[in-house]
Amino acid sequence: MTTAEIQALDKAHVWHPFTPMAEWCAPEAAPLVIERAEGVWLYDTDGRRYFDGNSSIWTNLHGHRHPVITAAIREQLDRVAHVSFLGATHEPAARLAAELVALFPPDTLSRVFFSDDGSTAVECALRLAWQYWEWVGQPHRRTLIAFSGAYHGDTLGAASLGGIPVFAGTAGRLGLPVRHIEDVDALDALRPEEKRTVAAIIIEPLVQGAAGIRLWPAGLLRRLRAWCDAHDTLLIFDEVMTGFGRTGRLFAGDHEAVTPDFLCLAKGLTGGYSPLAATLTTRRVFQAFLGPATERRTFFYGHSYSGHPLGCAAALASLRLFRDHQVLEQLSPKISHLATALQHLRQRHPSLIRDVRQCGFIAGIEITPPTGHDPARRWGADICLAARPLGLLTRPIHNTLILMPPLCTSIQELDFALAALESAITRVLTPDATPGGFQLQPLPPEAL
Image 1: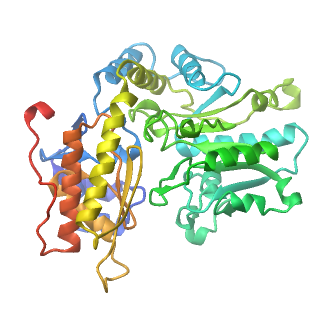
Image 2 (image 1 turned 90 degrees about the horizontal axis):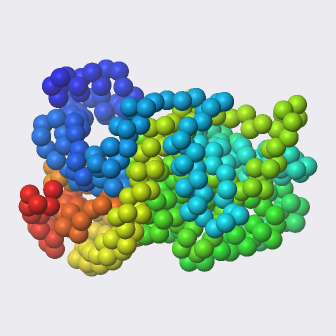
Image 3 (image 1 turned 45 degrees about the vertical axis):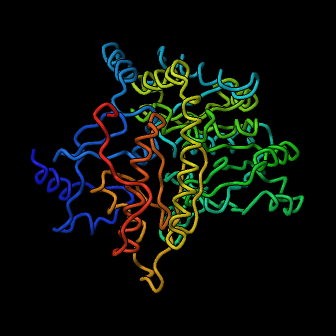
């Protein structure tokens, strides 16, 4: 099919997520059509290439078409592509569960429940927490506590936990009752009778993604763990975004040596190759669900593609790459380079850039709209569109530009992305200015 034929077919039948469809379907709109990928690069149907600046919605770790992950999926395809996880198991799922558990201290996270994506991983933790308290004779523990600005997914329970109203339906009227707080100090302010009703507290550790790369202060996770221990409350870490190296450590909780009662994983779990999620929990929680079938303690929750063999094979290959290729060790100098480059970027454009926020290989660049600007204009979206012809694909969160490249990105490729982003910022916010600092240069063939 030609590019125009694909675009027309898409406009006629497809409904895209987080997308103003009236604009997408407008006659003058020309949606980007991706045809193939290699490493950190995406190629459209017209042969143009783009740096994958947001890791394909924060999922891709080791680059596209990595030979190790591709081979693992192909090998699994030659065996079996799908197995019902209701009443059967298979080697990739059993091995993956064992390898995930082995990443944490003994006698902490010991059980793995597989699902499809980050939202269902959170949904699973939410239901397990509620049912746990019922099975141990404390059904009054029903209060869920989350943080303002949080994002935990789009299914009903997960969206309820989120602290951004637009993701919880029109005017935030959909969902379950959840108490949102600003910080850990708010927990101490709860009345004693309120503390006794708390079932679980959930947090995006170290950094909130959809809030615009909002960073938590150092030590917050330890304080939160101590509060939960003191009040016998379950702690949930949503590491869907931060897991698997994004923060510079394998998991965000590792920075403060804190292990939660539930750990939600997805996105990078398979290296960005296949839908798969995992909710890890403790022996304590698991044992509450044990008993004769007549007691109906079974966790009645699951998905047709739970423990999908292809996803498990991809995840095992991704973990092998972390071990065999020293991914985290090689990431450290790139994180330092990114930090220096972001500070220089801000110093060069103090009137255009309000703030830069970084957590490992996660960066948010908050821009300052022009004085007297139209408040309805989406400046962040305009800048990302301006970066597209410069060879960079990424997405904004309001006026914060997100740069979250694959972990395999080289220093040279990182500089290319930063140069494109800087040029786009100056072209949109000061159309008559000549971009300075980084200079856009084509990468040599050996860098591809």
